[in-house]
Length: 232
Image 1: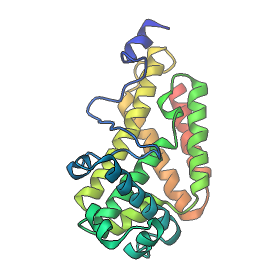
Image 2: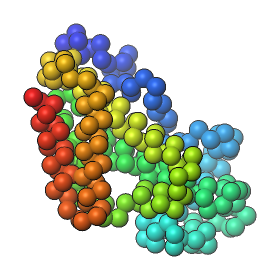
Image 3: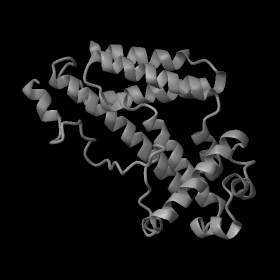
């Protein structure tokens, strides 16, 4: 392995996240485990029950939408009582929707793995590109995360979910750019952070067009042109 590439790797042999971006543990369904102190105090059984409620709420929202989904729908889907649901989500539907938003945001990233975390060759970048396109092709015009965010609005918690998602996504792309620079495959003069931000902005624009029109071609173009620009 080239010495420059070795310096990009951490001691475990993996590419680290960009400094300042925290990557928490991930549950089996791909959700980032929240750092909320109330959740950390739960027993393993309690955390499993809470996650079952969140998963059930997410499933209902994917069918009905966030506005139409009621707590009664979630209770019926998960087989939980009202007292049990409010034990884990004492602030009610808004708190539950925020937990669903965290779950859906984590899925955006987990659906791109392992490719997003292995951007060490142009073939790997192509595999990641194909994974992104396929993910959004499957999703179609209904975005579960956007549906939830439209309901909980511009609350600090919702903004934090969006900011964390964007920061984590951009940082993973940035690490890939740095890895390619270490191998001499991307020009050293390219700013990795800005290049990653530009590529991610193109992806987000392509997703918005897909949601509005059903046309995935804009997303494909954003990825293809963005990666081609990195190749020089």
